Image: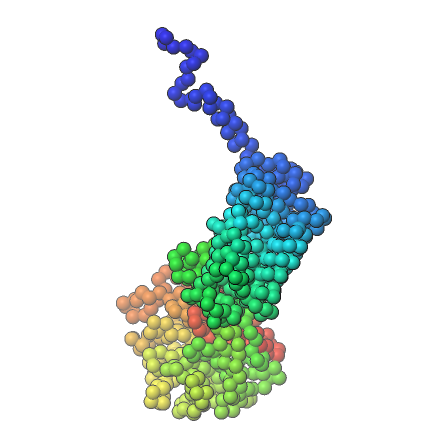
Length: 630
């Protein structure tokens, strides 16, 4: 190494001497990044923020923390340790905003999963961002804060570019602008937030300031109040996309001089005639579910948002308007939802869907009497309509089916041990009824299925003394004529059975006696014969409906099952069948049970949804209505 000074020699694998200190500092900082816990490691949130370094996560145990939090210019995640909302930051102990983001904060200053309340600032009650500060706020509830000037819930300057996602901004007030929030800077991400019951002088929920251009995507505004609208646009620019704004107690929007506003693919109350009511917008009741301002499955705002690929819901379907749609929204899960109750309690009513309505006919009343009433339910408005009574005698346990745009009613229970052979046809377009050719044999609690333009009456009870039937009656609506045929007859007598048609085959399952609750039969018109399928898991009376190629079966106890039809065909039998069903349930999959027992409920499928109307638990009838969202 002649001519080389060792003290100046630096191996190629090492950085130059002038950078050694930076490397050491970097590794020392990286080594310190860790979890801090409140109160296990630090007594307060403020103390934890003071002790934290870039990259740290501060996890706050459940509880109420009465303090004012000033977020320093650090890249730190401050989060509740358990479920969102389990930890509360309460600023009511002293005046001022509950949470403040100091100048120099970036989007890596993150606040997630807290209830933020009790703030009483001038500009910013719950959360205030100082000029030039950025922040990321997710899954917080900002509730019960006030501002004597602007921004009751959140106050941001035009220099603040923030991420504000999946928050609830509720019951905040401001004397001036933006009871819920004032607009942050251009380039902010504002999506999947709920603004509810906020109030201000200008913009009860949200005020668009004159120094920014923002877009609100998949947000919900409801019950916010201000004399000039729940959302107000100053002389800045505001776009609403895939949003819902419903303000039954006052105006929804206002645009101040110089303001630029456009709504697209949004449901806005009273907006239909406004110049900013853009493409894809609707003005219809969004039909919120029982809690959280989520949409009912029957909502007109469901699957009505922007068609763009970057707005699709998490399950890949078209965007749902409102705070729970879009790629950052909630994933739909199978569940039951309560709808508007029936006008009168009923069980053992006939029920079918025709067009976009459900029809219930007759049934047993609260006083155990039979009824002649006809009621129509419109899912997209969640409303019931009373129609003229049907002309026949009071009836229960009749069967209804839709065919060719008409509703047909077959048989039923007239009075003690008297069974009807009547057939009536109802025209939903005119509301008129007419009598049709009676059945060759009186029936009640039969399974009635339409297939290829004919109506099959399978099983049921007849006289004398409620004998179970194996004869299959076949009705041709076009000719108003009946026929029977031994080959179509059931292989065994059945009563209180239920049936559906799937891909050209007839299925019937269940019967009244415990020994055959689990019976599952299929008839192939191609072969003109019945076959026995594997037993079902049912242990009581069941009613079945189908949606597409899926059979749904609802037991009176409330247990609920699905069975997927397999389109494969066994060449030896010509019958559709399950390929490799799962023992011992023969391919039946348990689904979330109904919210309560539904003995005698009327069920029907419409628009890809299953409805259950009325029912009983062995006592008086009830009027509850539920829809199952797959």
